Amino acid sequence: MAVAVEEPKAVVLRNDDNVAVAARPIPRGFVLNLGGREIPVREPIALGHKVALADIAAGEPVRKYGQIIGFAAKAIPAGSHVHVHNLKADLFERDYAFASEHPEVPRADRPRTFRGYLRPDGRVGTRNYVAVISTVNCSASTSRYVADRFRDGAWRRDFPNVDGVFAITHKGGCGLPFEGPDHQILERVLAGFANHPNVAAYVIVGLGCEVSYAQHLVEAQHLVTLGGPRANGPAARPGHRPRVLNIQEEGGITGTVEAAVKAVYELLPEANSWTRSEQPAAKICLAMECGGSDGNSGVTANPALGVAADLIVAQGGAAFLGETTEIYGAEHLLTRRAVSREVGQKLVDRIKWWEWYTGIFGAQIDNNPSPGNKAGGLTTIYEKSLGALAKAGSSPLVDVIPYAARVETPGLVFMDTPGYDPPCTTGLVAGGANVLVFTTGRGSVLGLKPAPCIKVATNTPMYRRMVDDMDLDAGPILEGEPVESVGRRLFEMILEVASGQATKSERQGVGEEEFAPWTIGPTL
Image: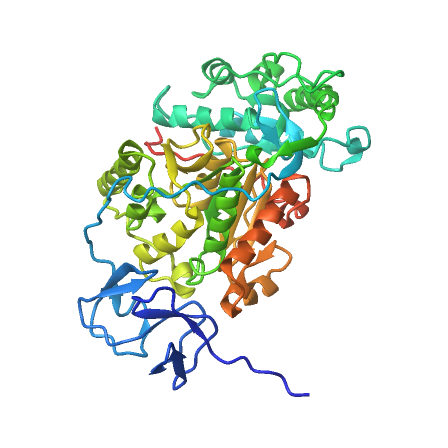
């Protein structure tokens, strides 16, 4: 039986683009027919890579998405592969045109709901965890040992409404200036996880002599536990101060583990008393991230996520993204959509800070994409940023907030974070994201408890190769399925996951090793 061979194909994203993106591998000598133009391909073009649609002179802008992604380092004949060997990321001026576009807030066709855990502060959990929070690396192993005592799941028979007990561990907590920026960031992140709508109860485990000591965390962040819901209604009992255990005070690791395990068992009945109820989709707080990107990230998965984000905003929910270093060169597209000049200026101020911050270390903010990104077809930070920004959909930008700050405003929000996936997603989840969507072209396997992580593949070959890790295939967009269609399917999946459907990363138990608070200062 003959095997059907798919014909090579390329996608032109905007009418004024001078490159197309390979939707399938294109061999040398193949003649592309794009809008009536016949373009003989001069060399092999891999999936996600770019081919020149016309002759491009040295120094001339190269355009994709209708925007500048770089400049020709030398003359590029039509049909040539456009990549790192002939494209460079020279600096160029961007017109920020603050708050000039006035996009409309998307409107919902009908109200939607999901089944979640209504918390006392009005937020809604999509999961119901008990957390063991380590204040410092010195108590990380101890915290892990506590969580390990609950791995077998035997306790679930008595507490079926609890999704699990997990440890929040990290490499910091000491060797940093007391109450300095890194101390403040770490405590804000830990408090964001402790007070997360997906966390029903928690214990805090410290060493006892660290800079980020437990009692300071509790007092500075005003930490209290949720309390349980009343039997006669959804309101909760008033919270109380969390249980704090310090290794030095408990007599060492063994004593601390036993005391913490006992404390968790005492919390389980309270955590189990929370039950799911029907909640409006306005209670979705959606975090958006892309990692392991390729040349099709901005063509398929990210625009589809942008559609889903608009649908969340239309319901009255919040959708937010970060990665300040990976919107560099595309930030002007957000400033134009800002609801005010002040909001747009906050984003530009963060860009300027990053230029200063990277400069003091002798680095450059445009020292990107990664080798894996380049292998997938991305060439410059501008191209990567434009593709990443497709996640933002078309909604107005309502706010720009610091790293790990709680998202308080419905609509599209930007959080200042690094581009590196673990610290970025850690900040987003600390901000209160109850669902995380992660798009990937090369195949990232990230998860981050307590938020469920939906992974969206940009292309079908990778989806099939990593089907045990990918939740949704956006590759059919390359074959003609509308972006809107895939985006709506993703929106429906978000509601299903928010209601309790397990993601691939959850089924594999992924999500505890990726906790990585951002550090910006010296280690002392």
